[in-house]
Length: 257
Length: 247
Ligand SMILES: Nc1ncnc2c1ncn2[C@@H]1O[C@H](COP(=O)(O)OP(=O)(O)OP(=O)(O)O)[C@@H](O)[C@H]1O
Ligand SMILES: [Mg+2]
Image (cartoon, rainbow over all chains, first blue to last red; front, side, top):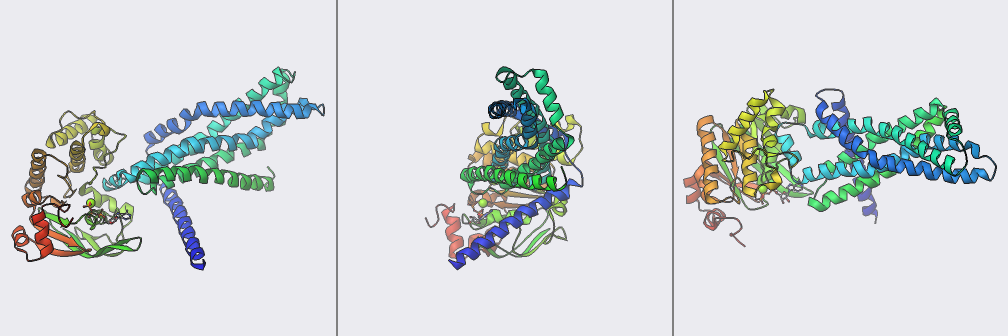
């Protein structure tokens, strides 16, 4: 039992060490070219543009349902006029970044791990290295930069669509005018909300791509190993989204944002 | 010259190499024999530093790479072509892009020159016209030949062949043997060939090394190999392939 605990602790520490050493490998390369702009562009298309449909769908229904629930709750107090403000602030500050990042982890993170994992177990990563090229630059950095650029953009798009979904409910079910809804949104949102809504996906995007690449490149043991790695990516990045979200929210509050 | 001194390597506490010494010079072909799982592929990967040895020294053309980083290895890897046992073609790219990959990465050539070099390398392995095919549409033997074209396209000084003829028909095997010899004779390429196929081994080898239990059991020329009194060596070359021996 004692041995078991010691071994588990030791291997956890080792796993964490490797995970952070991997961050260091990526960080070192960030400050020095080459950057492969063409590959980054390609990845932006794959992680960003191709994710649009599911992001639009998720956000629209989130905004839609949110306005419904909040609207009915507020109606009891005769306060349904505030629905636009509450929907938009909760979407921009919290729900947009978290939900879209979860969708992103499931779609893009899992995809990255599956792709790099298959390359790893079929020796394609070794082949890249043997051909004197650097897989961290070619595969990891391009995906990292693409995710850091595209996830915030996806979240902004998602926020807008969600707010639109809320407007639809407000007009159709709550008897507000579109114009009134819009004014209430504009009046409620302040600059700090936008900052908070932008910083989160920036950090989540970086985190998801690094986690996904890490588990992909360390996949072992054939097809099953790749499957396990994909599961790990989705679980670890989902958990980290919630942890980081709480942490960032707290820090931003302390900074008065 | 590539020199290995006292290379040790274990995986998860299980020793695979226990003090391997090797030397291979320009214009020389060394064949490594040994049973499946004895660490032949690992040895090739350790020279390229795709895997790090636990202990021991490696010197490539006078450079001691024992503590080299990935960045420091890059110029040396350009000098060494490696044919992987499982071909390791990039399956998201077609044949042409696979073979062109090292050219595009390391030489700033105009597009028509890239195409021409790719065509040349493909005709070398008798796969002219296969440029647009995807790896998933190729047979195992064809994959191996594309991988070979990709490995030689930068004209390396050293070539590592991990089972170049396994799974190929006799005619193609002969072509590959001729190719190995041609690279040696015309371009003074130093080669390491890992193979289980004794007949093919004799066609290309200048020297043999036999690995057993993580160490070099035998080292010498073809005639010395045939005359060896070691039972393992005799079983090995009589059995023809490792699979037949002791099983
Ligand atoms: N990356 C790795 N992780 C863990 N163990 C490994 C790894 N690579 C190789 N091994 C182990 O090292 C041993 C030697 O493997 P290697 O691939 O070098 O064998 P080989 O001599 O090339 O065999 P074969 O003739 O079948 O190709 C095997 O037992 C294998 O399981
Ligand atoms: Mg092998």
